[in-house]
Amino acid sequence: MSSILMLVFSIAVFSIIAEKIRRSAFKNLSVFRKIDKRSIHQGEEVSATMYFENFSKVFIPFVHVEEKVPFELQRLGMIDSEKISDAKYYSNVFNIGAMERLKFNYKFSSNKRGVNYLKAIKISIGDIFGFSEDIMEFEDFVEILVYPKLKKLSEITFNNNSLIGDIIVKRWIFQDPLYIKGIREYTTDHRMKDIHWNSSMRVGKLMVKEYDFTSDRQITFLFNTQTTIPFWNVYNGHKLEEGIDMMATIGVEVINSGIATGVWTNGQIVSYSGKHGNEMPASSASVKRFLEYCSRIDINTKLAFHEYLYSMKDKFDINTVYILITAYMDNEIAAIINTLRSKGILIKLIDISEKGDVNIPGIERLHLSREG
Image (tube, rainbow, N blue to C red; front, side, top):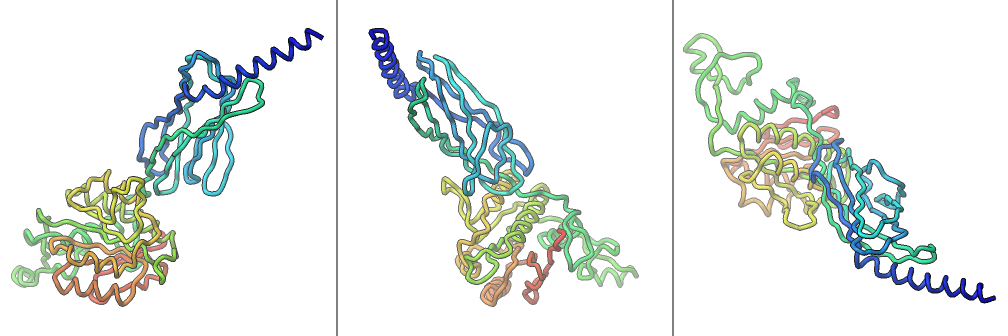
């Protein structure tokens, strides 16, 4: 009988000790993540390490960790996962010794443009008998940007033009922010409007204007996320994604050519800090910043496009070429565009709609093909 009482007493003592250890374990436990990069191209991998540090001199027998990961991110090297709503929960179970540091290496990847957030890490610590556990969330905020899909310019095609993307960009977009530096002989690649008729008559053959960049010209993309009425409805989101990919491809080419390039959009901008507005000035653009901004554009619309244009009407600059990318047009938008044109603002149009029916008379227009 005494031996049974002793056993019960021992179990009770050990239970009390285990309970105190379990309750105090969080005070001496540090949990955090490190990643090797915060901006990636689609399909590129992010290497991540999750650290657990036990600063106590007491062994922790049971640790259960859960990490919530956005569904757009694929975690490679996971232990176990469960899909819930728009996210997945990855879990792992282990123990950690006194004054021990553990680390678990894994990777993330994504094939979808956008902004992904890793937030709290949920930790459960149980007692040695597995009878009970305490739960705590460790805040460890991480932002991972996935860039738009970049193509070669030659892979961009337009339905209303037989020329390939790189020639179109160099001739259709680059030409107007240029000044005439000379005259050269005509070839079939030149536009009829570039023929210099006086020189042609003088030399007896067709001659065209040869252009060069001015030092103060710049390009700004006007990206319209509105696709229907009311503006907050999302329709043809895949065409908007194609448009962002195209804008990113062309923008990188333009920036690498030494031309300041910006973006204005009426789309919502995904930003945890709130520091990113609806305009990225051309004066501050770099390839990295430009791609990061394109990653933050959400296809959900913040403001009807005609209202957005009206709010920006006094900020348009005569030394900037504006490339309007849109799948939607209405009379109010067209009216504001024509008003801006009457003031000397140069605007070109890229139609990304399915039918290719977005048009403003008098404005040069290209229609992005479905294969583009």
